[in-house]
Image (cartoon, rainbow, N blue to C red; front, side, top):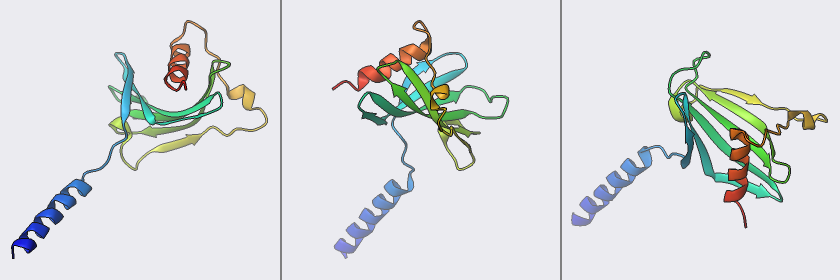
Length: 138
């Protein structure tokens, strides 16, 4: 009987732990009066001098299209200090949660160079590229 009670207790604990959703490990990168930007450092992958990573903008107020958060999958070129957004996912809820979203894929083709952004040296985008490339140094 005692073993049966212990097993029931263990099953209840496992059920409680499994029933809570798991969340990505979003690291806060920056904040201003309009949004908070996060980076999912666990998603960061480096191939030669190219870095792929997910980031997310969590808006403080709904945007014109009703979105409260947007996720970006971005490719950074550390040698040339440029980036290209590979895909965008827009959510009507905070922190990119839920199944109701709009997915936009940046279709690359022969004109791929036209999709790359090379931000000015004194811009926030350039600072972000430096940050991404610095955190993944070997």
